[in-house]
Image 1 (cartoon, helix red, strand yellow):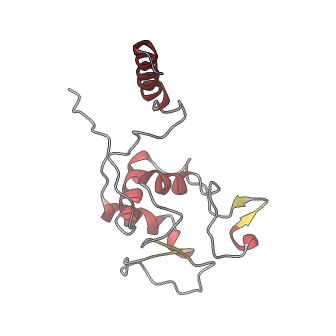
Image 2 (cartoon, one colour):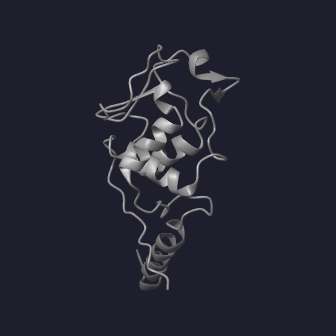
Image 3 (tube, rainbow, N blue to C red):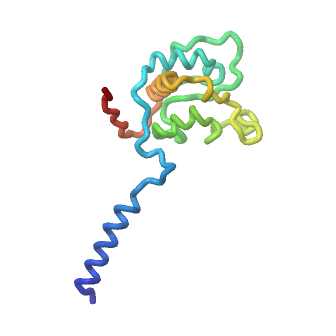
Length: 154
């Protein structure tokens, strides 16, 4: 038989689990979003970095045509199972070895377990990254996310 004290303790433990059990880990990406970018400028960055030499983008028909054959053809955009959230898209850009492209032979997309994609973290400005992500995001069917509200600072 449940006493009033037992019910109260059960309720209190439920409240504590909700408070402390739902707190994200310190390394969680929860709440992180980049400011809004310019997809048109992101497309310029995509071409300037020669991303189109290895990637096609679903729905981006106005990318420059290559005179030579692509080194590889990794399709970006559309509905894909491996990039379903904004955070996964940002991670794929800044850490290409995090998850390697599926549907390709392992040796065609990696060497020693690392992506063959160049790491542009020391090349891209933050603005270029923001715009590049905005360009790519406009071509993916991502699950909805709640963007971070950035208040104006004066």
